[in-house]
Image 1 (tube, rainbow, N blue to C red):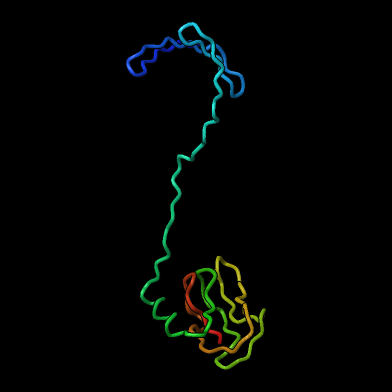
Image 2 (cartoon, rainbow, N blue to C red):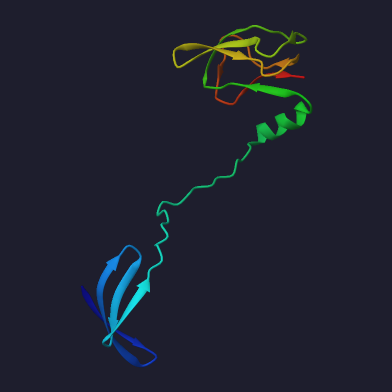
Length: 139
């Protein structure tokens, strides 16, 4: 198949690769036949994996400190607030519709993920919000 010339520690070797079957190669080195076991090549991705740290803006850091034990309800998508179905002090249950917003030309119900009491309402109808903005807070 292929012929090679290797020099190892000053000694020259004529190597003739005879055949390769699965992971066994038959080679001839200076007239002597050898069977050599080949290790499978480890495949590595050439595409690097990006790992990014989540960096909180100043407003988010302050908001989290102020909330304490409150849970913010965040906007799932950027859009416009059509109506707010709750007010401060309302007792809510998991699955209750809290806010109706228009996003991507569709009406979306923002529902409570847990039982609680509405602590603060941060939006009103007609406002525009971005994804991740705090709509209201639940205690």
